[in-house]
Length: 145
Image (cartoon, rainbow, N blue to C red; front, side, top):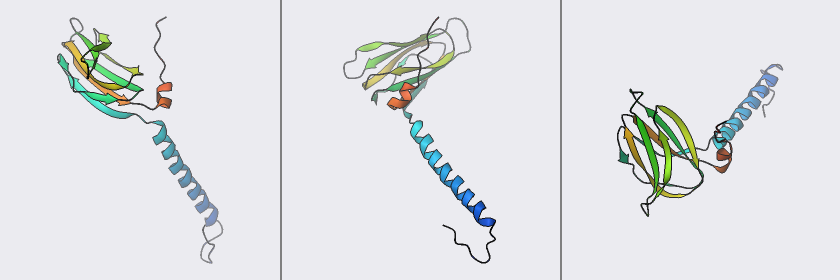
């Protein structure tokens, strides 16, 4: 690719070739990393009280990434239900905790939904993230011993 000209020393060509190889490798690696991390933020909701979120539409698989914070250790809590937006019927409780914390929950159902949040003395954030099947396969369920 590089022509050897009279003013280019012989030792410069191997260094330029090595630089070119590194550049090609970095470009290829960036493309691979972008493909592996294919999470797409669908919606993010936050609040400090009870509320119904706006509707969101997802394909399977998808992830609910949650975070709960609060100043009080006792008398706090949050319960989040997944509700089918078309029918208004609850698909079930997807989060119920009485302390601050965070976590993720993986879903294998598609549709149009919203969250019904019942909370006491906590701040909450819920992120809905669309995943690829390959990325969903990397998640391992937490098991109680």
